[in-house]
Amino acid sequence: MEADTIDFINMADGTREEYELLDRHYRRFSDALPDRLMTHLSLLSGDLMGYKIDRFQHSLQSATRAFRDGAEEEMVVATLLHDIGDTISPENHSELGASVLQPYVSAKTHWIIKHHGVFQGYYYFHHVGGDRNARERFRGHPMFEPCAEFCHRWDQNSFDPDYDTMPLAAFEPALRRVFARKPFGDHVGSV
Image (cartoon, rainbow, N blue to C red; front, side, top):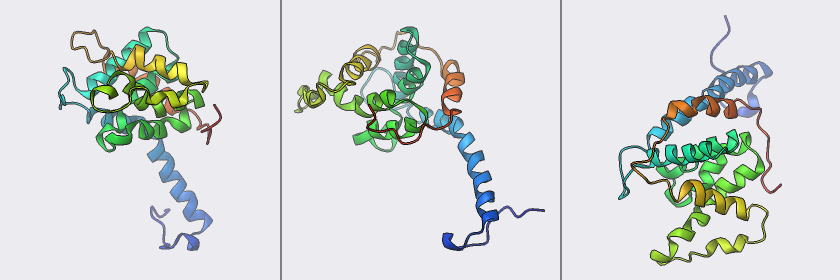
C-alpha cells in the first residue's frame, strides 16, 4: 500500500515518487476549488455594511444582470466573483478577485475584474474625498470602455433589494465549467 504522506522535510530532498504523490493530492484539492469558492461567497452574506442588501446578494445580483444581458459565461462567473476578495482584503479586493480568476479566464476578463474597483470609484470617490476620475489614468487602454461598462451595467446598480436576483445554484454549473478549464497560464499584460 502506498504511503499517503511524504518523508522529506526539505523540498530539495524529495523524490519523484513523493512529488507524484503530492501532485495527486494537489489535483484533488484543485478540483474542489469551485466548492471552496461557493463557500467563500457565502462569507459575504449577513452584514449589510449600510447597504440595503449584503455583499453576497450584490454579487448574485451583479451576475444576474450580466447573465440577463447575454454576457459570455466566463464574464458572468467573473461578475459573480468580482467582490470575493472583500472578506480578507477590502482595500485591494479587485486584485485579489482577479488573481483567483486569472488562470481560468481571458486576459480581458482578468483586466476588468482587476481594475473594477478604481472604475467603480467614478460613482462615489468624490463623496468620500477621493478622485472620481481616478480611472482616467487608464483612458486609451483597450479595456477602459469594457471595464466602465462592467461597472455601469452590472456593479454600481446592483444594490436593489427588490430586484429578481437568481440564486447561487443557477450559476454553479457555469462556475464549475469555467474552473474546470485548463489554466491559461500567465497572461497578465497581454491585453
